[in-house]
Image 1 (cartoon, one colour):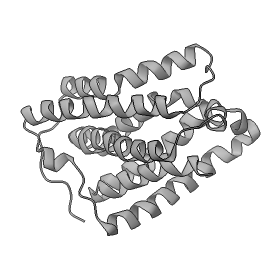
Image 2 (cartoon, rainbow, N blue to C red; image 1 turned 120 degrees about the vertical axis):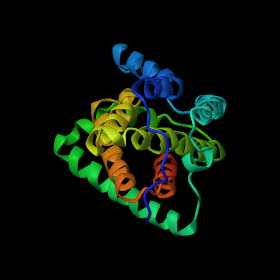
Image 3 (cartoon, rainbow, N blue to C red; image 1 turned 135 degrees about the vertical axis):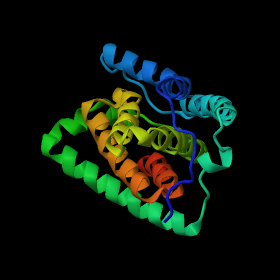
Image 4 (tube, rainbow, N blue to C red; image 1 turned 90 degrees about the vertical axis):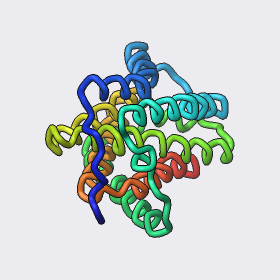
Length: 217
């Protein structure tokens, strides 16, 4: 697999601006949840629709800004393929196994985490879950990996990977310590795959599976 085509390197100010635009609202909400003691909440059609609407509104704005900065929108977006879906399914399994290996030693505490309570009370329709998985999978991985991690590689692969994982964890803190740790492991697996291959679609598809399958269990 070829490495991604050459793009402008992300400056610190530019990267901060895109992260703030794309993930700032989610990070603030996640931090507020932590400060409020992980308030009880559940996923429903209204909450999922709010996420989809936000991402469909902000995503194109962020892409237009990046285009004005010299980025190729086509280069930022993944190209779907059946092969990529197969690789993405394997990537999802690998990420889940890695997160289980890391979180499992923590014991039964995982059963009392906020994300577990949220999933127990979740009542979204399957149609809304599928829409969310497609939109959210594209949105997060395009801007976290396709832009942020890729754009920061000139500072070193470890730095680029670390920043993308940090941002991913910050807006998932509402899931509780174990949930955030699990997402950190998933972020490392996804980020390492992208660093090695430059192939974004399998990561997007793996993310779609991660957003869909928990609601089927």
